Image (cartoon, one colour):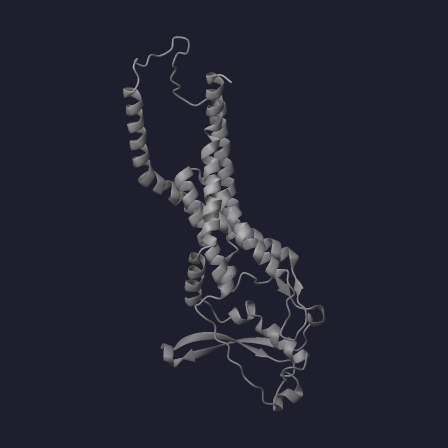
Length: 318
């Protein structure tokens, strides 16, 4: 292979090398961070802030994906490739384990096997991937900016020093070859401009889709990543008699503010015999952030009570 052919091959490979470097660096840095004590320390910090282990693990994985994309983009300067590497790391290190955990049998308080909602599991997985790619996008954008500020000056200094050293070591001055005239290209080739435009539109469409998917992720952080993945057992789908009542109370401790609350009433409460009975009361207080509906929408308190009453593990009254 002559020198000209080698030069053509290098020109073809030069645009690909930074992308491969960004992808591999993002993937490698994510794996290294995941296997260090940093992941455990970050998860414990999030748990100490008041979140459960499932939400803490999800947030930790998203943060690591952002850091991995930042590293890959800072060195390779290819945001898309760094996003792909960070997304691959997120799927292999977190999402696969999460799906495996949700595929395990789950039981309600009465000991009945709950059904897995496969469509909901797929939807939750897609939402998680969208969140990871958005986190990677933010990390890669910061990485490119940091690379321009921190890495470009010393790299340019090295290039300038190398050029001066190589020029001073040559005996003959550099002359342009008459057979290969140098031509300045004021603009891009039409095919290259078309590729750039197409890539910009694909990137914009992808970001819009990711934002749409991520817009339904609030329940993953408010309640739990496994919210809605398991439904009621078949024998207990149709509950009869239990009701949920909404009311308000004026709080003197809060300066007379009105606070809404929900009350679960067991099946026998609205029967003639239930009017003469006394019922135990269990107060369920939501955390922060949260609201008075959380124990029913996320915690399934009414379903658990129905299951315990139907299985005779909890009395209707006293």
